[in-house]
Amino acid sequence: MSELVISSLSISRSELPVVTEINARVESGSISVVLGANGAGKTTLLEGLSGIIPVASGTIAIDGHEIQTARPGQRSREGLAHVEQGRTIFSQLTTEENMKVALRDGSDLSEAYGLFPELMQRRSVRAGLLSGGEQQMLVIARALLTRPKVLMIDEMSAGLAPVIVSRLMAAVRKLADAGLAVLLVEQFAALALGIGNRAYVLRRGRVVYDGDCKTLLRSPDELHRLYLGG
Amino acid sequence: MNSFLTPAIAGLTAGGTYALLGVCAVFTYRLVAVVNFTGAAIGSAGTFALIALTEGGYPTFPSVIAGILVGAAVGVLIGFIMTRWFAEANPSTKAAVTAALLVGLIAIGLRLTGGQHPRVMPDLFPGSAFRMAGVEVTIASVLTIGLAILFTVLSDLFLSRTRIGLHLRALSDRPLAAELIGVKVRLLSLLVWGATGAFTTFALMIIAPQRSPNFMTLSLLVVPALAAALVGLFRSFWLTLAGGILLGVLEGLASSVDSIAQYRSAIPFLVILAVLLWSQREARWDDAR
Image (tube, rainbow over all chains, first blue to last red; front, side, top):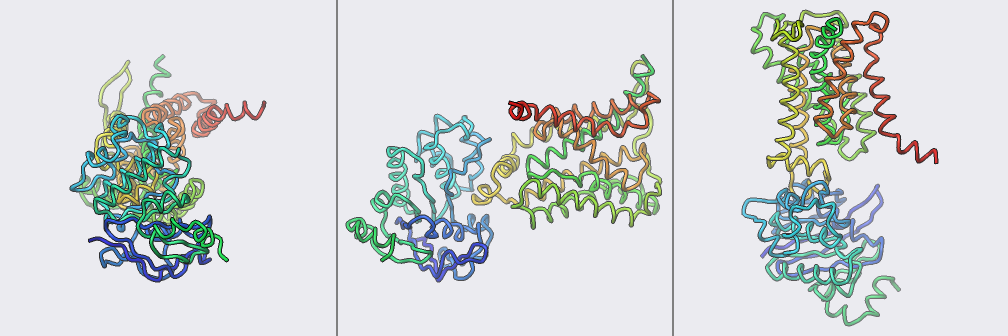
């Protein structure tokens, strides 16, 4: 059982606190969803977890091993994969080359093609020429090939057609069912709560809800109140 | 005819060196996104290590190896500064930093090597390789051009066929995304700086006997090198190679015409100006409309 444990984590940007005293746990085989309005600190949280920006205080541990001071590459080798928002493909490389960059000992391209067979037909195409949906599949597949224990995905559905979003959500659920710990940041709360197990709602950098996804999904008024306060 | 052919062929040695320095500049720009003004100064450091060792009575071959290692080490040092403190800076800032480092390297180099007083540089490859149209082609010419072609071919093959090359291409495309999937960004960046430092050093060792071998003169070879890189628009290794050789030939030809011989060192600036005007022509056309 792999798990990511976040304890009393605070992150600042330009010395201004953006995320404050966050406690969270992401367990193997489950999807933890992070929700919140724009500016709530969701992306900052993921960037702090993956080492893009330094944490001000607190700890991040994967399977009990603390990684909060490690560089992003080291955190990746420890089993933390971060799919950034904005579909960060290597645009000059082909689809298959994008995936080969991420290959580790024991990982195989067939895993990626198994999850997204669409990419197989597009394997020789320069990634910059793929559609938005295909690019999102590619970055998730690429992260998967690093053999992560924890997969963090930021705003996966942004700018994509509903049918593609549903396809991606199903794939993420499949990954969790196969034993991966998933931390999903999403603007579209209903979709994310529909596949998630545990939800965290952030407001102004603090966790204002920590509980079951289904409970929140059944109470849209409560979700609205958590987003906006009051 | 011969009065033009002789200086043109004489310019091939310089052309080969410009080409190699230019290809190294493109390599550095494409892979670590830095317009590197220190390239020739790094090579100068290695070349002067060779001079110091041979003046100290050490045999030539081990001194060449030691000089190349010094060039690689200085390259890694500059690379360390760039990756440690300026990795996230924009390209203009990075270029400005390397220009500042060039000034620093020249100052240190002149201090350590006795100012602008020329030193005795061993001629590593003396003599003629063959005659062409009645003109002697030196071994140095053949070697510098051969080395430039070899570096160009190796760069292309390395980037397209090897796993490290693939990682370097990913790194040049999106450094942060590459690091997030575990690519060893700093290590690879330092590898690029070290390799270009070593190649640059060897090129300068070949050309130094034909120049006034003082630290400043050799370091300022970065100007024709960057002009060659600009011909390749900092992307094409082969256009850069051609641009470097052409620059050398043009300089050679200019030196044979008395009225313009003294201005031949301005040729790289004219090339830079011409390429910039040509490459910006669409923007100027759009502005005019």
